[in-house]
Image 1 (cartoon, helix red, strand yellow):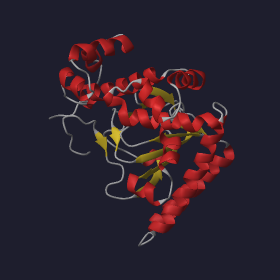
Image 2 (tube, one colour):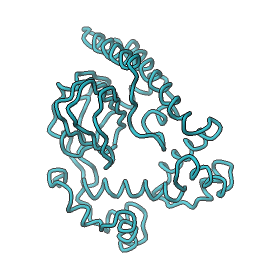
Image 3 (cartoon, helix red, strand yellow):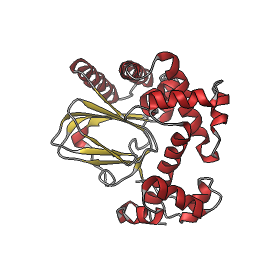
Length: 290
């Protein structure tokens, strides 16, 4: 477990200074696994067999289902309630991901699509491909001097199989002519949510009118640009409340609110509870010591 700073979530060290690692799900043990934490790497968590466990990812709970692959990125809040699951884990760093040639856009599709839940339910063929490629990575890692080039190509192939499946799922929801713009919107919101930009800022960046942009969001994402910004701010505030010892006033300042009373009203309006009540609902073991 890495040393915590005042404003960080507990961080689960998955790689221990390696670039990539593969192991059976049932063999992975960590003191942080069953409390909310974040990762220092990307994680592919594939479930082969389960007795009903679940994953809590950014404060939303998802069932462990046989054949389900969870795609979890660095920094996401994660907690695994394990009930003797069997499967496979693949971890890799941001730096190693970049060696594969996967673009930033493709990484967003895989790990941060704005209207996609953080998992894929794989068909039997894709399950076997995932396990075969994972095993090839494991075999190479056992070599006296594992080849980074070979490992990089194996990961590139694996991610591209998953990327193709992501595009199949996305095409069921959004026409291709609009999905690219919505992906760009999600990137812009991620980069600017702390600055509380108006809808016109995003519309101008996407060369579209605010009315048309909100129309696309309502039609395909069932939300608005403002609500997307608020959801991202709310997620960040929950992370800081649940995992840091910052005061409500300090969190409000860090999130770009003019004063803490405005932040409290914002939080209560979206959650029905106050920031302090939300913090009190968390397990004490998830709050890092200072």
